[in-house]
Length: 464
Image (cartoon, rainbow, N blue to C red; front, side):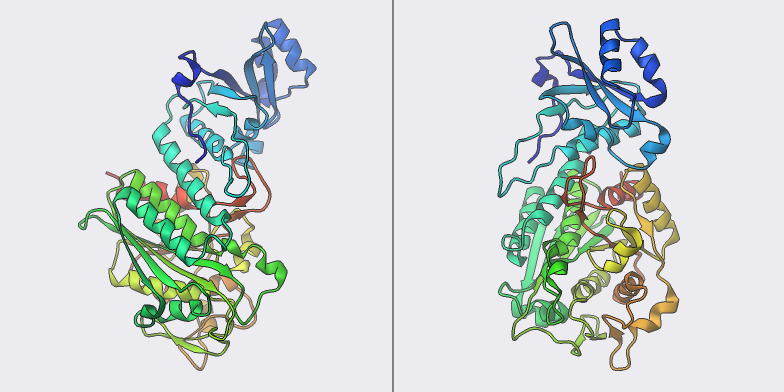
């Protein structure tokens, strides 16, 4: 696990090397406050306060004595997140301290970004850990920030692990290990036992070597408000008989990103001892090709009795989620949240770093959007447009898993899922779960999306 915050013990009680965040408009005033020697050094190295620009100022003996990090202007900062994290890879090993005076929300966000930047995925290749460590900034809840970072690290680890080592059985083991750490109950329904109760999970996963399964984790007191998380756990997606081309299959180890994200969120909830009755449901399957594959044109009957015509076996995620959502609804929880790497349409609309959010609950949508802004974990709401309901209603069955034409694909997928949820408040997130190009605090690879926003919303709704 990557390192968390440094402690004063790491500095022999002397404190860390100070880091000053310098807005572009304040560069001259900042330099005028330095010693003449340090000011000359900064000017000679062209320090202009550009966002992320990093400069170590030497002390009398030549050792680093202070760090200046460019803070740009407000417009530049709004175009990104975790700007301090850009400095981490440019600093020598040691312990650092952020100068006081930063807004507490900004300080917490930058401290989190520093921890997220320290992440290394080293299961198959040794990678040097980040040598620069940060003392918890003043006024920041260090434990809460570390809980968030550890949840993101867990999510990234799960997504980054290839399907050879993260199939349905390994995903089950990961959920059970998570439950064991927090004293949660875990249950598994697998293989042919799925046919009675979870027929669509069984149909999608029956062609794979590893049996399909429904994973369940339950934590918290029975009389607390019930919050249910449902995550798509397609550990690899070939597309089934509607086989994907090689270019589209290359990243399909991340098709269990919904499961990874709800597990990260569950870890945050349990670590914070949030007073809820938490339930996590993960349909874990591999969409493989064999003689047992389900076929285009098949009609499947879901857990809630609805029939579904399969017009594309590559639209399997909504099938396995449907059975899990139907189970979630039977308990009538206070809230159901689903997360899935579900549609390319959402990525075309919003790109890789802005998850699509679907809900009919206006107040809940506003709460999550606001929480995402404050947590530096943005989401964007798309409509559950009722005018498209007829697109998912074929002649032969109640529902169509892949309407022809391809228009409004993210919306029709969300409308499909909503058919399996009763009157319970429901929010669905269509995520990408991957950072295609490294940015501060977000290395290339698997990524947590929307879970910090959701945690902030849940704390506001259900916190003690």
